[in-house]
Image 1 (cartoon, rainbow, N blue to C red):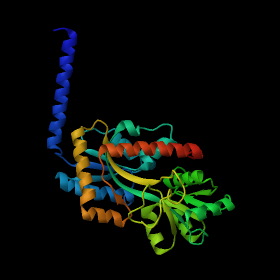
Image 2: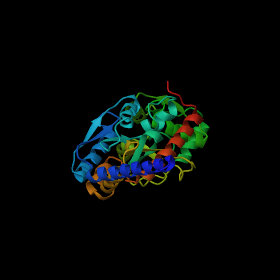
Image 3: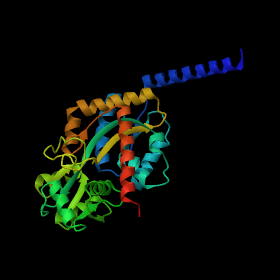
Image 4: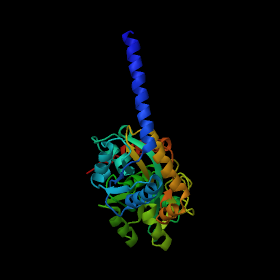
Length: 327
């Protein structure tokens, strides 16, 4: 047997054994608890979403799914742990824009590559960023707000959770597409920004639907539009930014489940099916998330991968256009 034939035979055998092992491991998976890393502190939106998913996933798989909060560096620390974990399906990440798409656009050196080092499993929830104003602002629509901003360039103040935060990027995208000038007032967190918008010290704020929902409902804030491509199921009365006259606008917070790259595809597929089924079919899960302003999705790995690629491109364009830099 010549070397070429021998090499081809060995490669075929290796491929067969590898495929057979992956199928076997998927058939018996899981055999032990699964670690579900949340790259932020307990109590926030990522934590609530992760614990909701973990409970149903544990029931479906018959093994504990343990939430492990590993905050720090804007979510990068926890994400890095998953990127470098053994790709066997026993370490998962609840991903969000910060560590997956925003930090890569703002930092030249990252300890992982979002597209290379993770295997997307399922897009779990999506919630729009909502354009809100203090009730004292003389604008009841996006068009009226744009007209007001153009009449008083730089006079309207908007708050954010800090340079490079989603709220900052959301408003800079609005400024760019609408051709207006607003003055940025960065805070160390969105909670502080919210306080000053509610008090009237600031006029405008883009923030996540779960954050602004109770204040819009109570009349303490006026909601003008949502940043998703379609209207929100939670706030259907608000138009999208595109419907409101800002073509090309999109801003949302998407939470999704990821595994380390090279996790066996049969395991990724099983996790994706179980997560999607619980998000789409379990009334208690849908109701729990919706009551907090999160819209359950559930997707295939391919759909979530496409979402991440689109978001990486969009965020990079906003950062470049607005010349946003971390201080």
